[in-house]
Length: 195
Image (cartoon, rainbow, N blue to C red; front, side, top):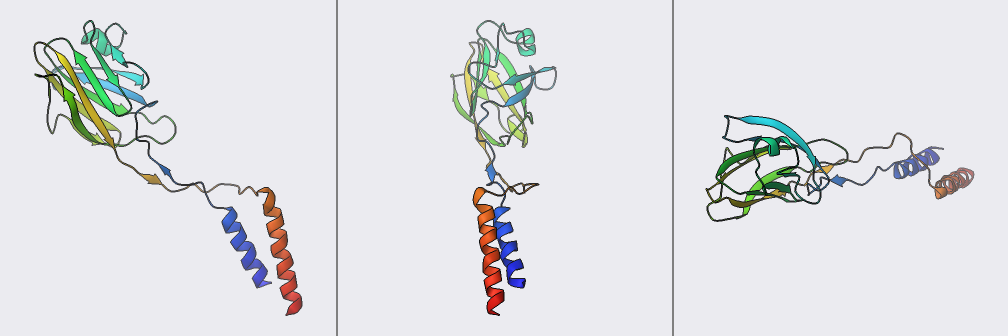
C-alpha cells in the first residue's frame, strides 16, 4: 500500500509542475509609459503624459500633449522605439525626460542602463545624476541642445529577471493522466498480491 501511495504522489508531482519560468521583457514596444519633463533641470516640472510605445513618435509638436503645449515647436518630437529614445529639437534647449514604465499586464521590462547611441554635433547627453536609472521602472534622460538643434538617440539596456513559476490552483489531468494513474494502481495491486 505504501508503494502505491508513493507512486501516486510522484505522479501528482509530475502533473502539478507549473508553467515554465518567464523572463522579463527586453523592449519597450507595447508598454505604457508616464512621461514627465523638465525644461530647466528642477525649475519647471510640467504635467505628465501617458503614452503607449508603438509606431511613430509618441510625443510630437501638434499632438496636444503636455510636452507639445509647453515645450515642442513645429517638427519636434520624442520617439520611443523598443530599445531607444530619439529626441529631435530645432533650437537651443535643455530637456529632462522622467520616464516611468507603468505596470499594465504581463512582465514589464526592467531598464538597467542608458547610453548615447548618436547625437548631432553640438547636442549633449548629460552625465551621472541627470541621466540615470532611478529604479526598475523609472529612469531620467537629460539632454542639452545647442542653438541649431538636432537629434539625440539614447539606447536602453534591460536586465533579465526570471520569475518562479506560479503553481496552478487546480491541477488539470491530461487525457493520459487517468490511464497513468490506473496503470500505477494496477502495478500496486500486482505488487501487493506477490507480497
